[in-house]
Amino acid sequence: YFECLQDPASGPVLVGDWWLQRDVNNGEMFFEDDAVCGRISVADGNSRTRMELWNDVHLGMDLGQFKEFSVGYDYRSLGGGSGGYLNMYLRVDETSTAYYDCNLVFNIPNAVGTGTLLVTPETVVSSARTFSSGDANGCIAGTTIEDYLAANEDAVMGVGNGELYTFALNTGSTGQDNSGLEICWGDVSIKHVDEAGNIYANTFEFTTLV
Image (cartoon, rainbow, N blue to C red; front, top):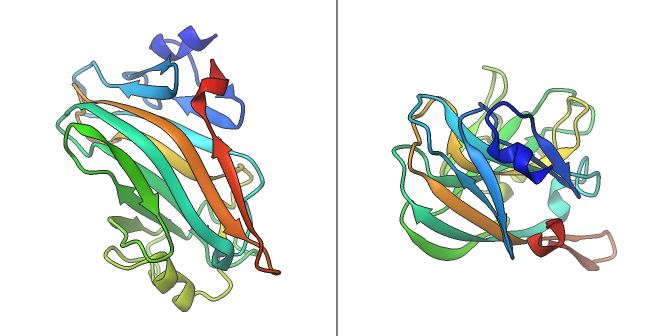
């Protein structure tokens, strides 16, 4: 069924905790020994591949418990759009049923090469988006997760629309022609702390997906 992700007529695939999708039917995803890769090979004004982490470990968790997100990347070829980035979805508190109240975006460098994207509470946000047109409530580009928490002391992680994700990795973006773009992602680690100060790490090595 992995071939579904390379067929523009096929739908998304859930592998382990990851919901893998081409999103708008003009990209493809493929698997290597230690990575999941997104490639945009069709010239179109709306192209992206996307990997959402679907589990309830971080969903609804107090934002103050977040410590770190890291992911390795191999940026193989440039496109004409956004490149690669992480979405982190937040809500102002656990009662919010909005899809999200804040979508924080953390970009990887838009250049061919390998590296690690490391996000901590002190990392500066590349861009930010609110789901409604109301008060941004601290959801502002150029700030940090710490700043959002200071403005929303009851903030929690994850979407509020009944789905199960907090984090998503993207190759390309909707509303752009990203043809030629290819990025591989691997070795995700997410750290959080409990009320007693114990630090936990959830790791995902994509060799387990194939």
